[in-house]
Structures are given as C-alpha cells and as structure tokens.
Image (cartoon, rainbow, N blue to C red):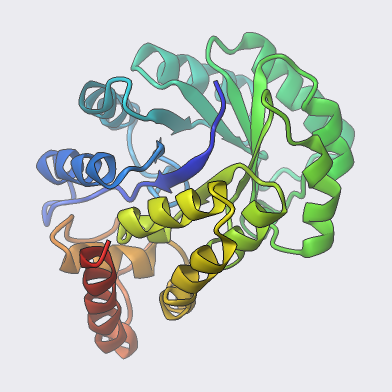
Length: 295
C-alpha cells in the first residue's frame, strides 16, 4: 500500500443533540469520494479523536468502510499515550474496516527518541494493519526526529509518516527516506505544495474538508510536474489557510463545515468559533464554494 495524493482528515459531524450526525457523516464521505480524494482519516485530531466513545469510534470506521469500499484508503486515528492502549485501538480499527492506522506520537508523556522507537516497533509488530507515523509536536509535546523516522522506516509494517513540522530543514532531512514502501505526507496545509514539489507523496489536510476537489487537482498538478499551476491554485487558498489557524483546529474548519451543511458543533472542551470570526467564516465558506465550483 502506497499513500499518496490528497488525503482528508475528516471532521466528525455532531447534531444539536451532541450525538454524531450519521447522515452528515455519510454525505461528507460521498463528497470526498466524488472529489477524488485518495484517502480519508477517521477520528484523527481534526475528527476530535479524544471525544468519541469506543462504540462511536467503531461506528464511524464501519460506516466509512461500507461507503468507501476500495475507492480510497481509510486511515483510523489510533495513537494514545499508552503503547498497550494504542495496540488495542489498532485492533478496533482493523476489526471495523480501517486499511491503516495513523499513530500520533504519545501525547503528554514526552518519551525519548529511544522510547519512540520502542513504542512504534511494539505497535507495528502487534498491528494487523499498516502503521503510519504521525508527528505534530505542537499538540503532543513530543517531536519525532528525522533520524528516528529513518530507523522506523525500515520496519515492514510502517508505511509512512505524516509530518506536521513545516520547517524546510526538517523536510530536507526527510526527503531521502521517501520510497515506494514509505510515503512522506505533509500535515501542514500552508506548505504542502512545497513539500510535494520537494519529494513528498501527498498531504493529509484539514482544508480539504471544504475544498476536496481543489486539493485533488493540486496534487494531480504536482504529480504531472505542472508546478506553476499547482502553486497558482494553492495561492488562491492562502487566506483560507490563515483563517483555519485563528483558533485551535478543528474549531475554524467546523464553522465552515456547519455553513456547508455538515454538522452543528463540537464537544467540550472545544467551543464553537468566537463571534469575532463568524463574519470571516461566512467569507471563507463563500470562497470555498467558488473555488470548488470552478474545478
């Protein structure tokens, strides 16, 4: 399995009651498939992974699996602070139809690099589905360094890395690790085109919830080495990227998704977008609609 192209880190739509809106969930998946997304992340950071119960978690993956079939790759967010709990979560993901596990570095506990190697090896050894490493130190307090990634990339059940650090020197150290058996995926919307031009295989995106066809088109342009077209289209999204950072993810993207008709809110401790930004949310939703309609 090689991961590439535009992969969307799906938001989880909640109804006014606080329950998951399963009709909206199915509709979101259909939009992504019709737009050409190559993969979907279920219950990742953008999907408020800390909130669903085990029953809800399994239901989200099962419904996605039924809807998707073999048209895209389903990655389930499984990373937890405990190695044993991560292994258990991988088993749930496998049982309910996920094709791969997106395993974030253990949040809060701050293991050493040696500890990360031991953690990921134990997880990958026990997993019946391939493992994708996920580094987002701004959220976890733990940074998976390139030398550590290099060690882990040789494991036969570890097939890629989602790297959310945008620093160019970080990517220069990672590019040599890219291979048919190990995919490099940007986790930073603002810089993913640069990363792909440099040698990354694709992106796991927040913004593509609202502009999936646009992201699929950009990825296709890069694969065709039409870099000018990719950069030009990406340039139209810079204001959207900036808006998605005005409050912690997924608050801004969920404001847009609500306006697009997918879900009504978030679960505590997250709150809906501040009133100061509601006008900008309307503006960005209109931008998303305009760009998507031109694809």
